[in-house]
Amino acid sequence: MTIDCYKLLELDKVDATISAIKKAYRKLALKYHPDKQPANATEEQKEQANTSFQQLGMAYAVLSDPKRKERYDRTGSMDESEFEGEKDWNAYFKELWTGVVTSETIEAQKAKYQGTCWRVIAYSLDIDRMLSQGSEEEKKDVLAAYETYKGNMGSILDTIECSTAADGERFKKMILSAINDKNLPHYELFDKTTTPKAHKKRLDTEKKEEAKFLKRQENDKKEKKPEKKSNDEDTSLLALIQSRAKERIAKMDSIIDSIEQKQKHGKKRKQPDMPSEEEFLKLQSKLFKKN
Image 1 (cartoon, rainbow, N blue to C red):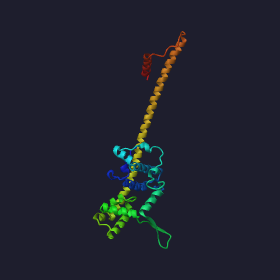
Image 2 (cartoon, helix red, strand yellow):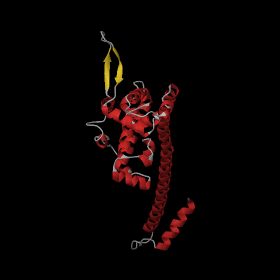
Image 3 (spheres, helix red, strand yellow):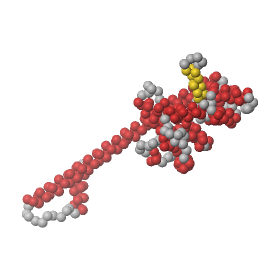
Image 4 (spheres, rainbow, N blue to C red):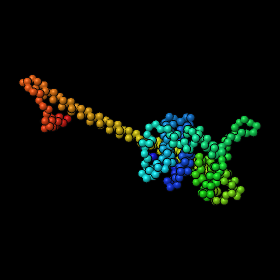
């Protein structure tokens, strides 16, 4: 099994700091956690989601550990023996969240970071929709990213933890508020990357990327099948060789038994010694010619 850790976490090797690695894992874990699969997902889709999530976990486990990361960067491979057998994957991720990593804990972290709350329509018990106001931590990160990337909304979304293309409009309001309050400078790139057309393009691109990710996992799974076939062929060849070897041994035993029987019917004499090496080679040559 070969895993491109940086590609899986959608990171550039040069910019992959511990903070960036952690944020990337959280963002992708939210998308691909097995518990978040649709209710009508097939068993194959569920299995694929589980495999994808575990591979994300492996990539995070390697890149978040300085020693593993140094070895991986140097060799381009990981010590797969560390991931063999049944593993408690949550042990690798306890530093991300307290307790077990489930769909609920991921959503809880997202809600905490984004300042999610429920709004209820006045004079009614009907729930309108869920609003993400943005926690102070998230606001600080968004405004800092705005200045770092000179207003490029695409880069801002790539940087902010738990964000998706859909958060673009929410971040836009957050940034505009800070600009109006004179807390942020205005960048032309912000106007260009926050138009309805740009927002729709990001949503479409995100859907395509998710489809590519799942397709890649499906292809990786298919590529393993020929390997299994090759192993089966090797096993069959080994069985054939072993079978022929047994046949040769049986024939040799038969010849030796025949010699002993002839000696029994002759004059009584001392039990003969085992054939000499020269005699043995002649017998073996005779048997192989018959095969």
